Length: 463
Ligand code: PMP
Image (cartoon, rainbow, N blue to C red):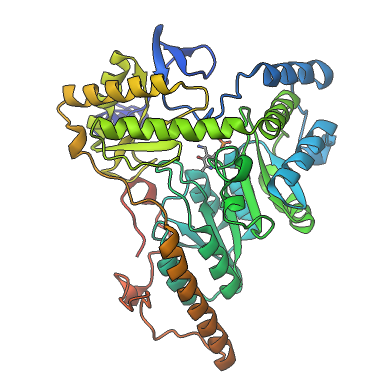
């Protein structure tokens, strides 16, 4: 057996082998999977705009007017009016001065992170950030410190221990595999205290959360305050491509330094025009966002009624954590046979031992379809010998109001401490851990684990 065949066999043995499944038709609530109709519960076409008639027409019209391809990087063969129009619209939607399009969300993350951090700098990255952020961190050659998922105390501690000139905090806003939200207000506060820049990836938030779907940054009241807000056009905006929203100066800097803009062909006119039409629809008729939320609530309620450990709420991403890779695959296959398509998600996308079905509600589902899906998933689980009641409960939901008030007090305390530290001109290096309770964090003496190249195939490696 040659090396590639051996590696494939190894993936098969570990229950980690992947294959492409054939579907027919657009990403609607129902698709034909290998010729069989199934309810689609794993698409990121959250608002149902990927196949909306106005979006299709806009893409077709743009193809007729400008052609299909952009020809080259915009720095080489020129920027098209349709690029500029979408950028202006996105900047105003996100409340920033300016915007820059990228070929995809993956390219946006590696381009932006690489432009903002280099060898001399330190990046602070949430342990459950998307793989494109992880790869952006790797490519930047900066030192990478991985902080515990959504743990602002740990982030504070990490920031204090790594006093480099250039600090960059990077986080998803809505986490792609768990559907929970980053503590953005606290992160922005810490960034202020420590003089760090912040990049937030709104791939799963834009169009879905916050006022009129403007995202989690807007929901936290931080519009215009985050250094770079990234998002994709490939999910709620129903198309393909991505954007970074920031100040004029930062966008000029990205045009000059983000390698995935400089060295990659610009997004094609049909994709850009399709996203522009989707954004217009979202702004004209924000009721779609409300429908997505009520569908998310309906899906969560129906799953809880079937015994799954799913918290009530309005978040459209709902993980059913099975644990083992093979069990997740068996549940996925069984559900398909019974008429529900929810892809199993395994390492390296999620940490080992937390393989899951990642369910996504769409605005285009009916509540009846979601109830039917929940019933089928519960039956499928029992058929493979898994009781929904015994499944692993996801992490608790984000901070509620009382905790917010409490942390506001802690925050004020931190500002005072930072001011004092500045006055005495030193970092309090002797203070180990310094969580609110004063407890040390694990291997405190060695500091947090630096980025581990294997992190995405193993459980959390933060210190
Ligand atoms: N960021 C996050 C959080 C994502 O979930 C994804 C896609 N799954 C991306 C970035 C990449 O976006 P795109 O699909 O446009 O490359």
